[in-house]
Amino acid sequence: MELYFPTELGEQLAFISAAITAAIGFLTMFAPGLTLRFLGLEPREGRNEGFAAMRANGGMLLGFALMAILLAQSTIYLTLGAALGLGCFGRILSILSDHGAGWRNFLLLIVFFILAALPLAYVYELV
Image (cartoon, rainbow, N blue to C red):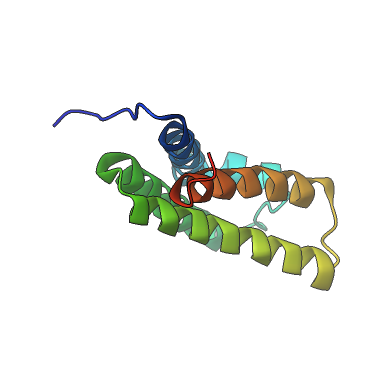
């Protein structure tokens, strides 16, 4: 099986978004301590359930993004963009409802908004 790299700009941007999402998922799955430290969510002593949750979320991101890369279908890119967009919506709810207006939340909101916008722009032919 050959890795397909798109030729048109819109699909390249969607592909890059999926690749970055896969890298984030890989890092989250295989380095949950580093991820939790960056997010300011270090687990308490003797309580390591946070690592399992981070690994599961990282695996989900990695699997989703890899399937978008391997299948290279508009509907998969649409689903990836919608899922990342709803993640942005959840982060906005957290900022407004949970008083989570820290720099990390805003930084991740911007990053995931861009990651969501690129595949959606490709699917809706805005690029």
